[in-house]
Image (cartoon, rainbow, N blue to C red; front, top):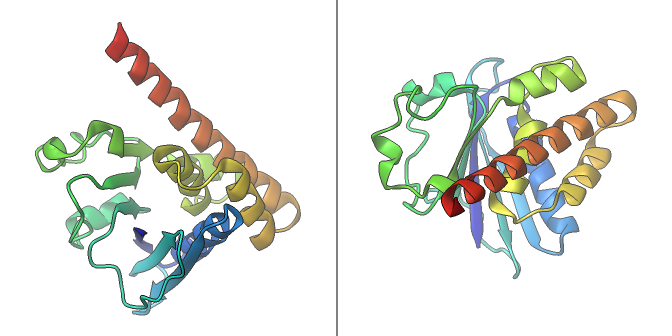
Length: 196
């Protein structure tokens, strides 16, 4: 079973992001579930949502304490909430930011993680560019698909169509695709650098 915990703030589409991830996993032939951690759903308040994916039926219902991947939609949470709690050393970290892990003050923390599992993506900027609102959930979903390879870009696009209509769906699909392609492009560059 692969477990994802998404940290963000109210109004950033954290719960919707988890739902779309589970839809994309389901479309890819996996069992999936998504659920929020209900706290204060005030705009700007820290929010957590969870997504589980497995090839078998999922019977667990409790919050995810030991995630395989963490998605951080708002980097200001890094110094407010223990977002990395329970994360395995071979886990994935995806952060919505234009800064590097070192610039975020996480260089020492992530030094034992696999570099290929660490990713920062300017998701708010991509959302602003394609949708006109800085809601980072969908570009992060595209980036997650590229980072982990558990869901396909095609399934993400179909999950977007499931959630949104018209220009909003089109903008979100473009944002997800750009995030996905930029991550895939970086992975290719890294591979070439290692072989050079």
